[in-house]
Length: 126
Image (cartoon, rainbow, N blue to C red; front, side, top):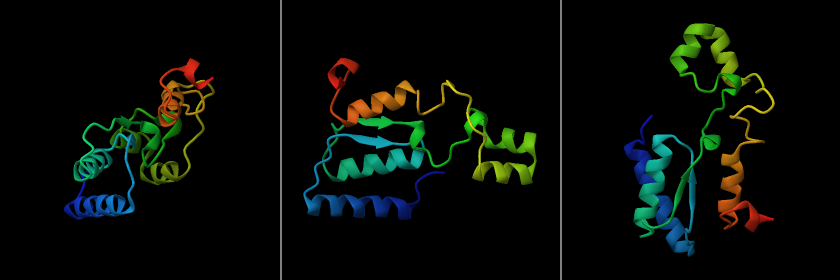
């Protein structure tokens, strides 16, 4: 779902609030959704912070599909049927321990934490 014109105005309004509050953006984290990425671009542009790094993390996406991560919605809906699909969206099955999508063991999550703390390597965080 793309960012709506109203969403664009809200992003610019948020940027104005950040500017008025004296907030300085040095790093940005977004989900991998197009609208969140565009929101970040608009805010950074309005704040003249083009050089701030942007990190896209699927872990910040609105919904997590557990063991079905990687399937698109149409494939999942066709496989499960409408009722079970809607139930699944609200309560996904747990991931298998050690899954590459498990936020507890994901190197992406660990690296995001390091970036947020201003660290670039494991050694610097220890």
